Image 1 (cartoon, rainbow, N blue to C red):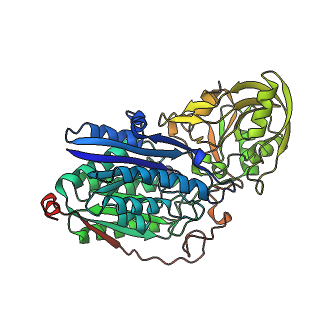
Image 2 (tube, protein in one colour):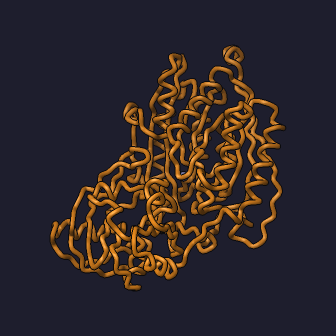
Image 3 (cartoon, helix red, strand yellow):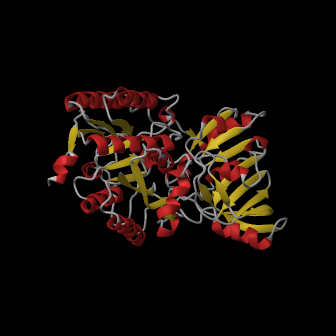
Length: 506
Ligand SMILES: [Zn+2]
């Protein structure tokens, strides 16, 4: 029997969100409560399905922490979170293997590589002969320290993401291979000094998907144990932020080097294509006014809480109102004060409140509205995509003029329709819908809206990357700098678990 410790620590931050996140942003699962992810479309759900189906494996559910995306984690939050997780590792340091589900785009005050810190501390505790495998979001930032600490990995293949469980299952299968065969492996890494964004990243239709399908084919043919192209979260301004190709193999690494360098060169050649095509607000509004039948989507990628923004931008609502757009608008916003005022006043009441501009005060300013309280809720829902709980805190649906706005107390992922549905709203009933996300799954909006404008406005997750003000990531970096040289150059990370026999004889 092999005992496998299962851990999870997931958060994605925008360094440009002025609101720090805290320990309280995380949903913590200790021990058996991690098993509540059985059957869910999450990395842990997928890993459990594989591990629990194996008669030789005993799962040791350890510690799970997951947060909605947010601003950087406070120093105190990081201290508490990391020490709680590592305490669980201390208690289980004699396990045969460790599986860690990570996002990869964390950043804490005082620790710009939290995942690297965790993995190297886990390694120190379980020793060099215990396989550690990590699963990652393709928006994560893999650091050299992370790769040095692990023996294997698995990375999402889809964006908008839907293969959460599949990635966890692949990570679990890599772990089982390492446990049973203990092969000598190499992880080949080629970093690319480019940050990318925009429609070409949608894996079903965009060029990025071609690179990922090539990686998947490597995995499926056995040429690689794992492979992927990580693009980082461009808003997580940390030293190793970049795009990178990763190929893990137990064969001749020379072949993996060639493959990884070739994919990196192809990716680099298409870097201009993999930028967002944003529409200025005035142009988007003019375009929306010209469409008189059917629904128009305004994607507010610049204030996408799922990428780590504050969610309190009112720039689209203000812009539409100022421009006299008169058809029915549905929007969403984070404003705890407005939500609280609505809850105090009650359904049917009329209130005068500030809407938005309470968090990212450098970019947004409050908008005064006189609104009717149409509906109140506790803000509890479930993501359509993954089925995991969403918690917006006290939530209110406010109406004023031609606007219906769902107001949340807390920032949370808005990349699907869950928070509209759970507040009694169907987007198809509106002429213009604001979604605070760069992309949604095709069937949710694009399949039926007349037009999707990704609007160029300010925000801490703006796809207009040079406007953000990176100060930490390595430079030069495309598209932040005019001249960026690049020659693909692989780094190799070797790992050799001793055979069980050798381990026994010490
Ligand atoms: Zn992601």
